[in-house]
Amino acid sequence: MKNNVIQESRDVGFWKSTMNEIETVGVLPVPLEQRTMTSGKLFVVWLMASASAMTPLLGSLLFHFGMTDMIVAIIMSWIIAFIPAGLFSEMGREVPLTGLIVARKTYGNIGAFLFSILFTFVNMGWFGLNTAVAGDVLNGIFHANGSMWFWIIGIVQVILVLFGMKWLEYFYRYTSILLLVCYGALTWYLYSHFHIHSPQASESMQWGAAITTIVAFSILAWTYKLSTVSRFCVPKNSGRKHVMYFLAPSVGIMTAVLVMAIIGMDSQQATGNWNVALLGPHIPVWGMLAAVGVALAIIHTNAMNLYPSTVDLLVALNTIWRPHRLMQPIATLILGLLSTILAIMGILNHVSGFLDAIGDVIVPFTFIMIVDWIFVQKRQTPANEFFTPVQTASHMFNWPAIFAFAIGLIIGIVGGMWNVSLFITILPLPVVAGLVAAGVYSLWIRKLQVSV
Image (cartoon, rainbow, N blue to C red; front, side, top):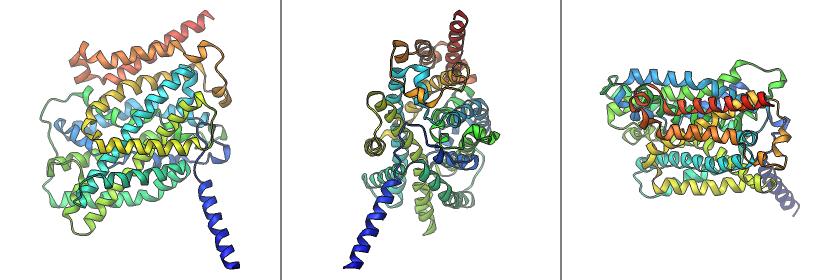
């Protein structure tokens, strides 16, 4: 009898300690004791988040431009985006809040609410895309049909995200070796068993179109999410102002993009398919294991889609209701379910249009926020001010920012019609739209400051 009581007590203790590990901080400021992430850990998180089973798709999307120009375009994309990425990442160290809470000062509470709803669906789309890739790979490996693997992948990802950034960081750190070994094994097989020659351009390089595809697929699609992770980093006022905190996210993201896009392009040339994981079923024993490892690595990326999607939804809910500790796990479960259904319904078939649409919205939104944070808020707004009740109409909508965003959005949508050759062959349209939007906002706020 005594042993049964002891065992029951242990079971209850284990269950309670496990439940206590589920992240419930939601949109509130991250407590100081949880802000322990170093620049090295930040680098690994974003390297692994970018090193998805879907990332080699870039090699297929840019195949017609050839290997050399693709590599140059990826490097140029990093040069264009590393400063915005670094500034957004530092924002999380300066004030331990997710970016869309900070957006309440930039766009007003209702403006931030609307963006939160929008980006919730954007991240659900990314989650669905990556889950679809993993499901297709596992169906191919096990010669299966239907949605069973889609559901398995979706459930595993949801469980991981429930435990939040602390356990996500552990997961990235300790499974990074597994991913490198699995991809390394399949890449070795690709280069040792197929005739590989560097793909040459089959048409003239279109720098604007190529860079637009890359930044929308990778670094600028991630940028507004960077503070959602860096809010768990060591605070900036702690004295650790090392440049690596600024560079770690962009270098991690683009290193994975560069390496895996090269593998994807070579795989497309040699096998007719960009997805190197599909080689696994043709390799006895170890090939299948490696392919499963690559497919499961989709969790690296998808966790960083579902996690921000949850936080974005919580920002919207917090505009209406007070935060509750159960909101975060409930939102994770609901969004994970809906995103898995998107994968099953075939969102992968609409990837090109999806990438174009998110670039039109995210880049102007991000650039305006950076201008506001640096030149209006001067990086000094206390965390508690983002939760003050709405008292005036200006707190609901910040019209200068919304007007500037609308200009950027219009340019992004119709700019290509005004000058097709300029924005396809030379300039990346979303970046131009973002810079124009940021410039309009800068001029407007400067005029307001002078008049005051």
